[in-house]
Image (cartoon, rainbow, N blue to C red; front, side, top):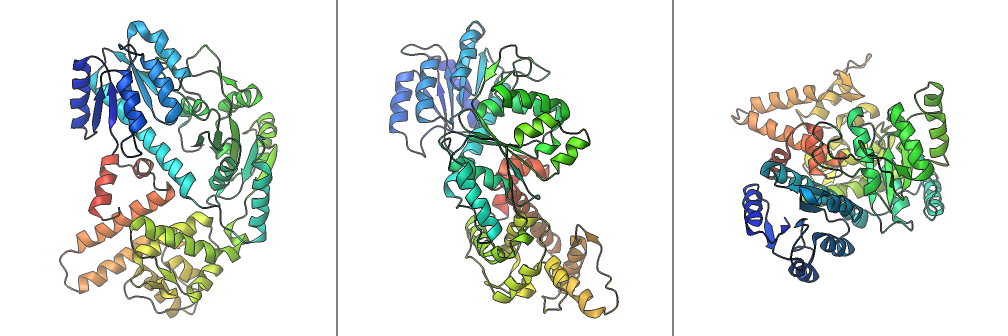
Length: 494
């Protein structure tokens, strides 16, 4: 991990922060003046550059505000925390106009200071993942006519700042379209910030979007910039906009109208230059009729509508996407890529994919982990595909797919499949079958074996759903970030 740079002419401040951060296993590098920091930045590589910069505001030889301005020119996404005495709060507030992440009042509570720095580290890591995805993720894949229409639309819309509404079923790739629009626009050098309005509790969403002032509510220890400020000069992607609370829709309409908003608890208008791209899987016209969505906001967002087809509407793309996701899964897991037979691809082509491209991607993760041979055959496909095809195949004894196939084969009358949840034979039935098979072998490590497999599948699914973002995956699984890191190492999922 890259170090936390601490800049302060006070040796005691540097010492206290260094020891506290080292206890948290966060590496540090300290400086006494801005001149040395700028020299170090000039010679820094991607590996030696800071993860977070913590700087005092008043030092001999140059202020923290001057340092902030210089740092932001070279590392615009680097979180900078400004330390200041209470008498310097006016200067600290002005620092936010230069892009400071937060300010840390002196004298500070050490645990709160460490917590703030760790939050900045997480923000920095999220930015790195986002930049890496923007740089490494290939263009969207698709040869189907419906996808070619989408590509043409992206080409036309990318050169405009017009607001775009992307519609389509869950898992169809709406965020990929938004990223493509940003990547090919004149805002590509600016930030791309995404927020799922349905995934954040109503009482926190306002602060997430617009930020808050210090003391605006209980727990607001410092001023915080919202997503609109973070996306200044770039693109803000509002996913699942149809679920936005009604009262927040009014505030969003104001920002879209004139580019001004107020932080929670604030009294000074903040101006932002952001291109908004919204997405939803819902029928917004019906939501307007039901009184759940403002009609004026709907018309403001619905300047250009871009519909993304479901995967079942572009079945000819399934082979290409499958091979691509198998390559990606192997790269993530550090294993040899699996190959898939034409007969297995034909079976996949008959599946409806209610979860669309995301479901296919998750299925490829499953196949990479669970298929014993390098060539994926129909018998290796997940049970939901076998059930849909309705054709008996030779499956490994005791596997969840074998259990499903056994039911399909043996019953010629109306098929009594295992209990179904969301169209998939329950994993509990497959687990029981696997356990019975292992018990018959006389092994005495069955608990560890099945627990390891269960945890691996769960973590891989969460990482796939969050596109590799470990912190978000841990949050969605309901475990700590240290826990998921330890489990990934223990299970060999690096």
